[in-house]
Image (cartoon, rainbow, N blue to C red; front, side, top):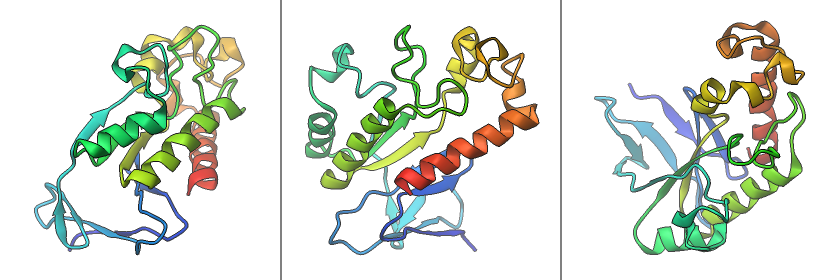
Length: 189
């Protein structure tokens, strides 16, 4: 029997392996029920196959990215929806986007940055307005591996880990990861 995920009217985040699926619904619409098909190959939304059409956007709010065409986050999501897209996948933080770390959600370890949280607020609000669903990754594993020197969990930066691999093995790091997911749930869940 497929596992059923029910979106609460006030909720946005649902755990899904290492990703979080954010179900966006207009305020007046009833919550949708998402299930996994019997063969586990696709999603069902309210019992009907849900075909995802969308993008992986690492930096939708980065105004210097030429792919954004100078659009705001809201304008970008509106254009996605107008062209038939129904899903966007983003990362909660983009630590390698600039040297100042403005695009980190958590930096230093355990400190959540209001500027990046506000960017995510804008994204979620736009997705709610235009009926676009969001898959959000709490961190970027590519960035953990390839930009470890600047990562918040690096002991050299005050974090709990000496190596990138310890992000999943170090008990203190795992506790911080749980706190980060709890922070995301509390803010957007």
